[in-house]
Image (cartoon, rainbow, N blue to C red; front, side, top):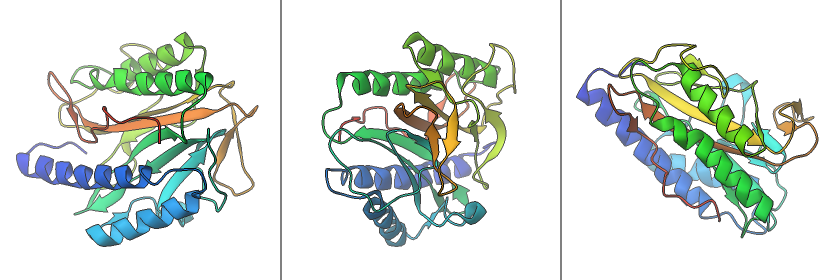
Length: 254
């Protein structure tokens, strides 16, 4: 989607403010003993309260409001009825449909204080994505963003998953262009002012390969290494991007 007027920008900002406020409330409930299924049910209740729909539900037969990925589940984790425990890494990928527009963003929390190793992983995961936000300007390419995500991950001793990508978003949940978490500077799709995109990646303390769990959805790291995921929605600007899902000041400790 390319936004070209102030009315559409206002509606999209409204949608994202609602979505971010909902994810914040869900994140505040993360603690020892709570289950991912509890958190998913809360997301459903919040959708009802705000008069919005969960963007992921019923997409390709998916029956939950969120994707909640724990520890070695890198992405697409099905919310299960297994209590969280201290030290778990909890990635909640969430989106809504508001006035015909989709949102999609993700944050990872540690249940209580993370270990030294997980603190480093969380920091690298954030930087990999947040460093790319300022690159979302007209004339840059998707490869510029992908190059930076992989550079940060590799610099810290980690890998990115290459089989899952960021993407455009708008009246559909996944729109063009694809934004891989790897690439070459100046290559890929050229960014255009007004383009609404999701910048995301999974940074893993593993080799970058995944296996799909028997639930048919949860993508787990090949050797059981932990994973974190962060995702921001932005509008590509002429000289500066607009952050739609502004979670820059959030903590990664629940």
